[in-house]
Length: 166
Image (cartoon, rainbow, N blue to C red; front, side):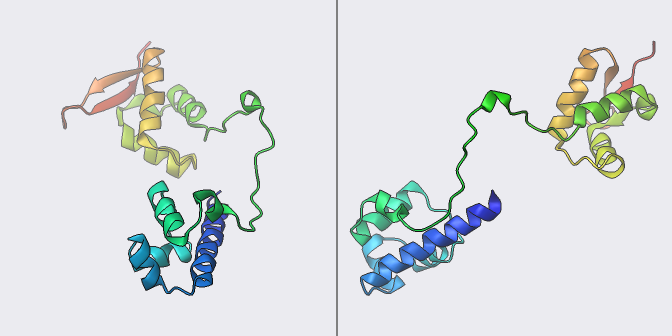
């Protein structure tokens, strides 16, 4: 949605500019009436800033419009038409499956830090994932008695993960 979001901000900004120009005002004059800085107004009009509710209210009052009128402009907004949320499955990057494979193989024969696992997933498995996600998946493997968690001697609060001996 980031491309659509950018396009919407640009269309909104153009609408604000049109409303300002309809009054024959410069950005500086709108600044004086709205208490918004010119740089802020410029960022809005150029689609570089997503407005907040306070900004919308300031613009609406200054331009003599109700807030909803600021959103009445031509834009082909693609709306959700599939309301079966329970049927949607969030695609995971495959972290759990990849870690299951690593736990079965020889990767955890020697103790590994979370960041080593993250780097391995990124470089070897082509899965880019945050360390917090990896930590949660490693915890599940520890809880399932597939890996053991070892306190690090290098840094307090850091843990290493290693395959359990059977």
